[in-house]
Image 1 (cartoon, rainbow over the protein chains, first blue to last red):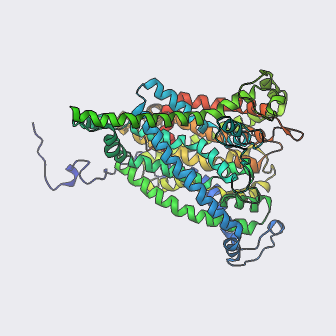
Image 2 (image 1 turned 120 degrees about the horizontal axis):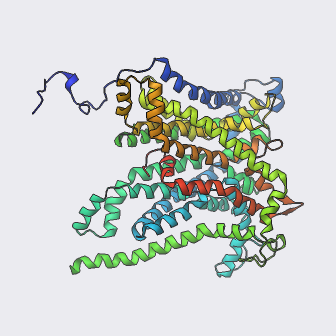
Image 3 (image 1 turned 45 degrees about the vertical axis):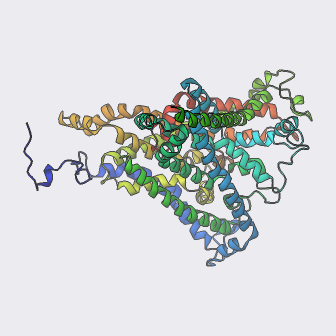
Length: 324
Length: 284
């Protein structure tokens, strides 16, 4: 029997009609959700927002370490920012950052995508897929200090394993000086690619696994070649997943600094420094608080723009999936 | 039919190429790990040969015992464990509360934008917070060199993660069961503890493991904040030297021991890990 529907009464509209869920009555006291969310927000204010404001304040002042403890520092406008922008050290580090991001983040996502789809399309046995996946993901479980130490060891110029292996294979004629100026940043990038390519790989592989098989049945019935299926069906359907993998990798790469510490300490002669590394060095080791603060605020501002754009995109993806 | 066979043939060549690439990548991934294991089994003299060996001449299984001969190494693992565990419990507790509020009372809890703001804290470079937090902890009576400074600092990346993921998991849990319980006269707290929490338990465990691994593996904060009274294993590993000589074999042996927990957790929980690592977007 059909239920009579009274048109025009919004309360009888089904849930999906206006796209918004009806507001359900609150079952708990009003302060309960506020308190539940308030705790973490308060913690994050204390450990993230307050320090950021502190940094912004000191980026406008000529604070050094003694000045900080005696309270003896004066307002100098944007002079610290001027110092940072005009210093060669900062400009060089931006070039390094660009080099690192294009090979550390972009290349990793491309490689991860190729490897994930290869693993899914070419390896047919489920057991082998799982084994290979676990093996490929192992480096990701290592802390940066082990990765750094391991690669510093492997790339030791005089008696390192990589040089020896390349010599044995006849690929190089003499030892490569992995930690010389101009090469050391590449060494860091190699270690980083080894460490983190598994993240986009894992995400894209899982995205591929959860695509609906019905689409592929249809494509097979239509006689499409496997190559065409990958290009015309899989990649477009995985667009969002690949984008998310890229976002995650990129934000991580943007704050990346650990391997610089462990492998090269920014050297030799500051040729492998990234902006974040300089900010730490100036602040904690060289005690130029004001200048370090300017570095930090510049980095913070850039990443604030990027993170906002990324989250906007993520919100759209999650909405489409009905998650948000 | 003959027409259809041709593209498949072409695909077969491409397939071999891709398979070869996968094999090469597997080699690239595994070679460092392999070399790590055999180095951990070499004698100190053998690690310093001018031409490195790719198979130990002499197996020195004593290296693993030698790592723990120094009490500080064992203490470092304990410190890391304590810090990671307390931080995980704290993140999980706060994250579960906030995640539940975001999932069930979105409007009253501040809405989607607040949830995204919390998540964004994880994505910012920690550079802006490190220096002020250093001087803040320095001015407290226990100084920067205590487990508490790291436990609190690791909340910067683990609390947003836990909150966000718990929100995603609570959204997946059907609301109708709770509503049925309310009709039976259950209090919201009881319904939460007895119905919803068991439903999200697998998710919660994966969040806990993920947070734990991130805290266990953290290097940067530990490197700058602690080092004398408290030493996490991540900052101990780069300092394995004897005089001017680096003890590679002991370093690698210690690294292998420290790798066991995260690798085991990953193998056991890989299905849930993907959900967590992709911030809930990809269902593993």
